[in-house]
Image (tube, rainbow, N blue to C red; front, side, top):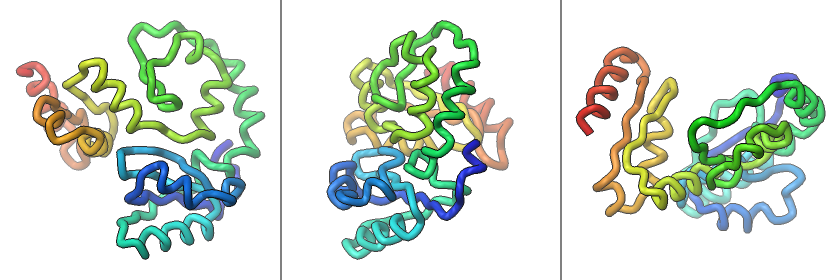
Length: 198
């Protein structure tokens, strides 16, 4: 359903806080918005290509870093809205199990309630709303988490996670990646060994 949406969208990561980006988005919300808050000064914008590019140029003009993301569509943006009703209909047909472990929601950055995760509407919001990774990392810190294992094809989130911590917090935390490009088995074994020792 997402791939069937109109192309012409874009996503870009900018070196700016959520508040700074929101100020520049005023009046443009129907064309571009925040797709993710990945750190205190790491926000992803998503929407119509020309609007995203204009905002990127404004941040670059202030000496801020910006990175255009290689994506097929403008995910977590207004450009996903035409498929949301059909997506919700499909999501209602799925049987959801009960959570066995705690989940920090990317929608709120807080602990998700079990019934929340078993509702189709929650998953529709995941497609459209911003990913609140930074707030989720702050919640984990508040709950005393100090060891992180990234389960994914690359070590992208581990790097982002480190940026969500203060200098002092970094001293007591450890991030491990289950997989790394071009050395999957080596990375998995090294991470398991390091986790066991820790």
